[in-house]
Length: 199
Image (cartoon, rainbow, N blue to C red):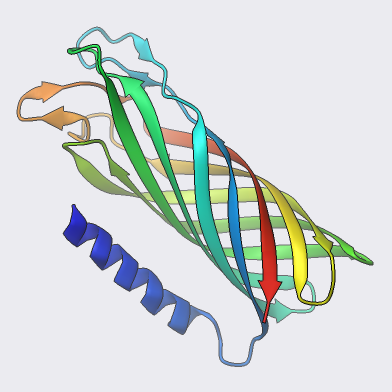
């Protein structure tokens, strides 16, 4: 598990350096925090719905101004959901790490900016025993209030859709499985607030 995380971290750092064009200007770093709402799981044995908790998430975005009204962006986000293990009745965690390359359209009205973004990337799922990397899409609608030329307050409503496999062993240890995905798409939605620093 730690090996995979190190490889993903190295790959993301590499992407940051090759994806941001050298001719781009106004690089921007945005740490953010918020609440994430998850899909449901289903019991591996019973087939009944299992609720996953809605939890705090944290993330970081690196963006560059590609055109006067558009940015390129590398987005990393992490969340840890809890759900009840069907066999033991104890809580089990589902950690998800999202990494996406996005395009951001900006619609300006003086110091107020409305943003719409679409992105492509991956989602790494770790359920205390099983782990898997799935392809993922993200879409967001947000607002920015520019406090000064280098600092902005950012709010955002974002959805992640990851293409999963309900037959995968992410939730299995040995032969015992605690849950499975409910269908082929896992959806997380998030409300976030952050501060963008332009340099």
